[in-house]
Length: 87
Image (tube, rainbow, N blue to C red):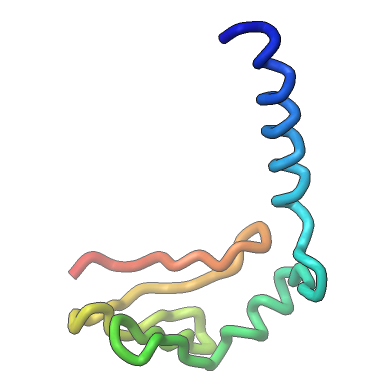
């Protein structure tokens, strides 16, 4: 890459990384306990393609494209993680 193109590319990468770590205006980054509270004992689905049930004991059940889904769910490092079992 030519040197004159390197600086704009680096600035774009750095600014993108900085922007991606901040919530958008009007949004709030949730901590681990808030994420757990948002999903524990609740269901999530789009009404057609998938439906997941996040049970209070950390297990996961549901349907995805007409196939059963089983596994566990947890919040790790402020990320919702689905650990699915293979059928």
